[in-house]
Length: 408
Image 1 (cartoon, rainbow, N blue to C red):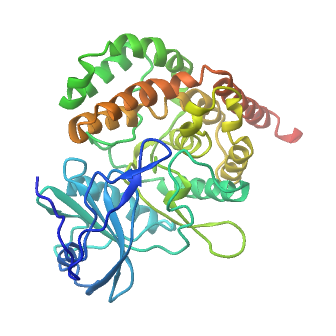
Image 2: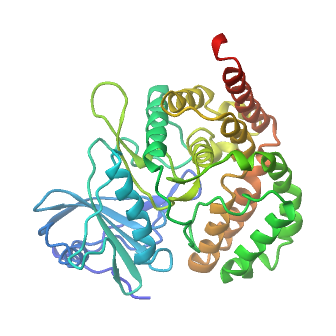
């Protein structure tokens, strides 16, 4: 694999960048940081940007290298991914969806075109994209997934923005993506029959050699049957009420830019790396899973785990969402059924990355035992049942309102 690491134009070595780890502590980045020389070479393919003068921030996200670069035409966001994670064509799937959203009034990052007309640039083992820095303040840029909003006002702002995104996404009918690594989709459990679910998971594994290699040592069929299929049984009757829709699938506060002054408001939506054709309820489940459950604190919190659930922010987010785009009765009913399964598909693709690319036995075990199985299994705990019961009560109120609107 070629390595873009080198001294930059000032003669300084590549900066040491710490990234988010799999727990609460930062770790050394898996990928070399972008350098001034590397960004300068890349931006020759984007003549409208002009010369780069300075790199002023490096992202701590763990699966890529990214920075904000000052240029003659203003700041741009530059991201580099291993080509095995995303090819240029796969990146442009995201960019076409983003363009659709922009054309339908949603404030999302503007992706720039290279001189050949493409919005992604491949170079050796790497794939790059360049975006204009969006409007707003990046107040959560150092926050990890699975950490909450600062308050209910931000939760509500995120909820209303997600509803607007779902309205803007209507009419975008591209097929679901086919990505091997680091993908968030709703294909494995979107089947009525449990045997069909097992068959889909088996096919998914066989299409990913690293995943098949790791799971050859695990009785995954038995573990899926024991842990996941009971949740699928609750979801299965509701699947027909879920309309396919392209969605964001990584709705966390750190993927949003925020109004600097005045009431809390989302000004730009970032990072469509996991966007795919799922459904609105799936995207809402991901938003709950990413922001409102303190997963990273679970190992150190043996009792009273209800305190790790941010119920006030959950209600604020969902109330604001429904003020813009009311959930149908089937969508509201499906949310507590889908939530325990929302992270499973990403966890499998993450396992393929950890075992096949990172070669980390520790992170591979974490992805399978803690994320793929463990997150779902947690919903059988007191705290997990408390959260699902709360969502079920919201669904019941939703249904009662639909049946008796004059009583509201």
